[in-house]
Image 1: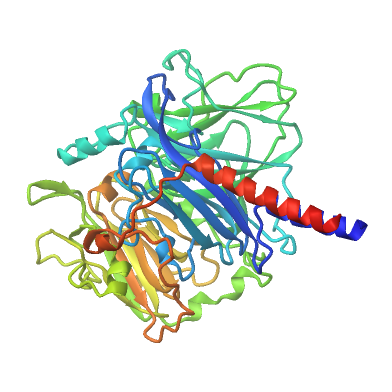
Image 2: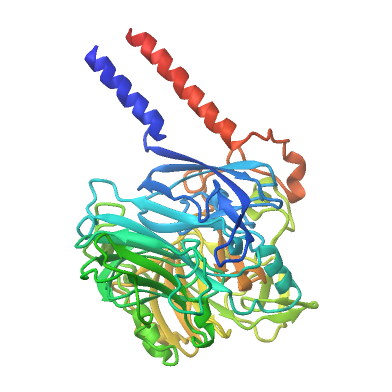
Length: 587
């Protein structure tokens, strides 16, 4: 009887934890995105909450787990969630961007289902359509190592998440109308830390603003995961009198380097270890301030939180700490990013060391140069371009069109290099790439602002960055030994960044700028990677719950609009029924 009871306890625990007993375990989440009223900067406004909270809850998983997220759209417009940095191996159907997925209509739901194959680290999710991220809807993703894979540092005593970003007191619908009218967004109204405004560090901060307070214990070391989920502003993070030991970025362990402050660009994620080694004579400021702007003018948009020791003797005081580098000397700022190296002695998601993959010894089979220029007028509208093309998302997702033989949805003629002799144009033009080729991608920024570029479905090796224009002879300066691998990289104005990547993940994948204003105006494309010998092993087919739209909308069946609560109740009923049957068999 005791052995039967232990089996019962095991099965019941597995059900309650959401784990599957087949092969790789699974985790399940139900997320409802809806509008709520909040006042992060002291002004009531409409924000997008996930399960009633802003920012949204964390998605947690372990390497190789299957993840299912049932998303209910309670907004008044279509919705897609994308999973920033999750590689979605063989499964672009779950990517959550307009080129690969039909939007979730208002009051409908869609279950994303994917495996975090051979990944660890810090990522985040956010709504990818219609400028919605500027109103919220984002939250962190944490993928842990399997127990048998050691961390390359002592287990921290706790974890802290900072979701930082610039913020406007107008919601996303107002901001996109401003862009549609040909205006720039202008200076943000503030910087938020975990959805909260600044601590009143001086008289310029209004009274009554709720700020973030992080409670810690002296002598302990915490892993702090930081994500820049803002609209368009690079931010500098610092904690008064504390060192930030960089240990991970977007799923790769880094060589461990101490920084007094660190620049985090739009769409990027980092992990730091911070030891609480101060005397707690007072609380300490946590600061996130704008970079690559006139910092004197932008002072009022600085984000400030509080780090509070359990034995603190009083409030934080004095001037805010300042960054260690001056943006008027951009070379010194770039040096910080160039210092990020791969930890070649550590394991990643697998037992073998990450550094065992000798990317620098692989022959480069193709080159893509993506050039950004300032927004320009095309057909009477302000647009942003990549290689002179401002992308138009087709009404039918591209991979869905492929599967159903719908012609004329897109063109595979995106230029691999800038074309100066042709005027800028609107087009649904994508890259037709060769499966398993090894390519270099050069992001050349001729725009006036820092740009962050992201490639879905992939991580890439950041081998070089410099000012000026990239030329072929610059390959001699590449880091071919310990370059960091990541999915989002900054490119400074008047500069370039070079990355290397192996095109081994079949599907259609989004290449975009993470700065929402430029992305909304068309600075993106897709890369189509199809295995000509596809046998069902290198690319998954469409899921059973695939949504149809555009030329295929007649295939879409009417959805039964269940609610999140009824789904949760249904799951509980199924668990209860299973338990009753099991108990009956044990008696």
